[in-house]
Image 1: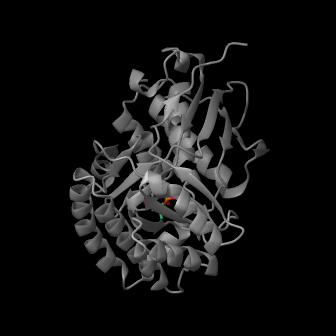
Image 2: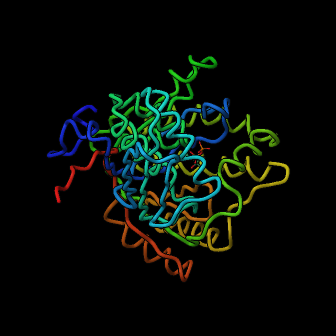
Length: 348
Ligand code: DP6
């Protein structure tokens, strides 16, 4: 594994011990990924750009178990079942094929964020699993190759390989050309360190998974392609706004891109609607803050929770207004966070 993915003190040969622990953080897209052009390889239809957070990390340990006859997957201390387990097992299969090995593994994953609530747990989850799994199976991948691997678990996970800001390319062509060209890389944004207030209005699992909602939107929404082409313009504008470290421009573009994505879902047959009354109340509060001169902008993913981009010095005020608008909600202030890292082995 490349040293830049290891924390100081992580043994360079940890992978050779057939066990590795990795930590990854969620990322929130400012320009969204929504819709796939290849469902098998998880190739997005549009490019996306995100900010990695410094909150809600996922810690995953992968340990090879040569004597076992099957993989064991634990999520927050309980055995994973159904599709959740299946996705991890399929991902391990991919790593095994790449590594030319056959041993099953024990996977232990700890999330510090509600799973499946549109808070990007699959992004941090598959980024951590890609790094820990690749290391445990002895694969020597650089960060770009790792982002390609993480994409196969969940496309947004490829961006969590990197800290701060990252872009995920939709790539070109089909088959192996698409696979090679759909990867994430860092976007250098000097002098831009906004806050993002994560307003959790409902931490429960969502009713429609992002994967199913994305498929339905792509297949049935007449609004989808219009949003996809305007998203390319949003991305170009976003790059300029980031270069200028212009929070108002970044926020405006992020908000219009996210609301446009949700509009495509409302146009799906049958519609997908993640907004709840509490979501709307928070969106109103954000607009109210702006009317009072506070730079605050909302973005939302596949769930009812709202993420508010703002200057760090305004974050406490945003938290107060969110709490007032949606009693019972919880808000966490995030900043830019690190990319996925191997954790040094703690000797007993
Ligand atoms: C709304 O990456 O969870 O958060 O690739 O099917 O696993 P799969 O989908 P996933 O979708 C994330 C969609 C989004 C926007 C984004 O993160 O870009």
